[in-house]
Length: 342
Image (cartoon, rainbow, N blue to C red; front, side, top):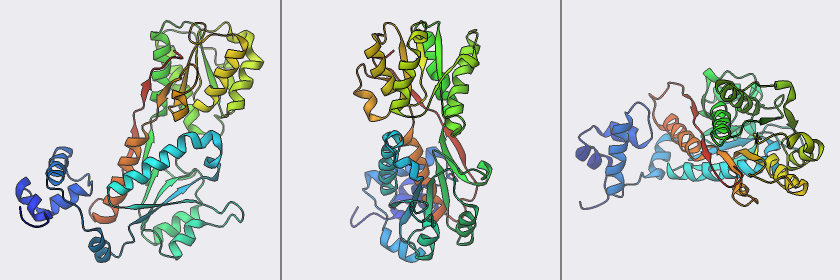
């Protein structure tokens, strides 16, 4: 086919209207997944690319999405996962022709809103939010300026999940997977570590999922006897040091954060508790370090690739598809990654 392929060329080959092609390539959920995949296959085969410059000029868009994150995510324990999440999100946005401007939602020194600043300066077309404490006045400002929002990983307190587009890991299912694996591996004295449940709903859901699987399997669960620690390497390390006698009575343990599991594994080695022979260990996140611990850590993989892909396609659809106004709230299933610790 001479010249650069156009949307009309794809439409002709696919046997659909050019508006259907446009919506499909923008990831619109108004188009069935079968049709979207067929159109994307044809577009890939023709080496088709959107003319982003023309599109942005026509729609008066910058092509930049503000990625708002929580300053706490800068610390080491959080950044093990979130750095990977930000990387995948940048790549996912690039694949749909958008760029990411990653900023803290609030100035760490002054507390002033970077959200308001970005809006005043017309720097972004919308926001992907990874933050639990966005102020209501900032939500109202975003709403006044009619900028699209998509939440991933966490959602702000006081905001109804039914009022915004959001994509989350199914943390409950992850905890359930962890317990089932320990049971299937022959563990009969399983312990659960409670981590920062008063601070983060995600940890509470992981624990509840684990409890559910244990109860379904007929285990007697002593909630009051659970271990607890904070979400840090030192937290996991101290847990072993302070409870090494009790730990020798267990044969399997679920620690719902990899960073705490790393400290836990090192302290077990110092106490002479063998993994997995004496105690099988499962973490949660599948951060890169989990492949390098000794032994390597069995863990629950957070589906960050799928989360960021869905979020990027959704924000693009909200920007360029005027009819895509139905809210989406979706929990994405995690997966079990079996390594040497179990």
